[in-house]
Image: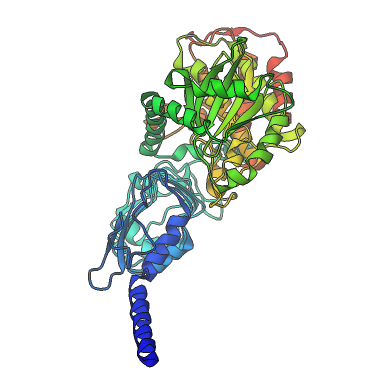
Length: 594
């Protein structure tokens, strides 16, 4: 009897193991799950990608060979995906099509794609890929279409690509490629449209003569007697400063704009539910934490006020959550930011990190008074600034800021950022400098807001050194390529902010989209034609020529593509005070004059 029970048990165990073995994900499925783990997916594109599936063949964007179950198609275009493409993707050796275009992927294109020797179609356009084009793509003998346009690729076009026998469509336009375009093999059939938008490419396809290694002719060779070294230095200075982050595709930039509009629309439309959720959040186990006596109220008084907040109290929305206006009985008004996202990192370190942020006080930083802590949400309590955001003042209201107001706002934001970088302890990298994070008081004095939140709300499952926070259009090219935030990436964003304040145009204004540029690319174009003063907003009154020129110079240095060429924020403040603020004899500049 015991032996029979043992046999029955062993049989059941064997059946179970066989079933479990049958349910184990295939190697290609494991590779795709590794790909998924490195990608930020706000629209839940990967919702159906599950470890328990036997194979990935029914996953969204995936197709397999019906006999072998090997993955042959991976197509995820226009999905708002961002992150790095892992080297593991090279294990998909049966892949015939890879389409990741019009997303926000960054970092290098994996050279391991050269192992996907059956690949026929590769679409990577409209992302933020940097580095060079991998020469290993020259091993893809079956490749018919290769589209790498509208990225931040640099270096030369690998000659190995000219040896691809079946390549019939190639596009590397709107990047930062340099050197000679291959003119043999498959490249005999590609013309100007495949290469435009790369300022330092040369070759017959662009009708630009390359200067050979012995100083042969060049379409940009200096005339006899000219200072060729100075000319090259000047050209290099301008070419290295500008428009790396401006190469996002028209579609990608429009997508960002639509995302912002759509998010705010949903907050306004469904704000009532958000308000009800806030009341429910604080009904059980909520507490108020005050910093240094900054909130002269009893906790119960604040909690009672929070219970009655609804959609009528919403005054804004942003990447970190909804913003409410809270009016106390004594007439004092505060701004509440309800954090829309919680995670393990936030729960473990929320109190400690906020205690640090609450200790930071400066004239040009928004004051964090305290917070409401509940089991399911966090509500930060800030000073309320009646002037609203700089974004609203520049783009959303009918009133126009004159020259003095704009310069004063730039100076205030610069001092706030300089304090964060150099003087407060611990030092803070903002990571999301933009006009909507610059708030204005009743006298149009600037205050930097949301400092520290990008780090505080970092996803615990991501690598902090490779996760890009921030807003496209303001992001430094080195930040998009590496994911590493530094003081110099903040400086780049501040330079974009200066250009936005001067011009009254958003970094991804529609007038730039037509040319595939952003505001940095527009500055580059104006500087090259010696028309940089045209950047000034026609609605801006009282502009001074010397101050304008100096401010453009500061902005141009801040948005240099080389982080080492960007000044520190202390130096920015010094230059603003000495070159822009200090009165100097000048004629007023009439932007409407001929």
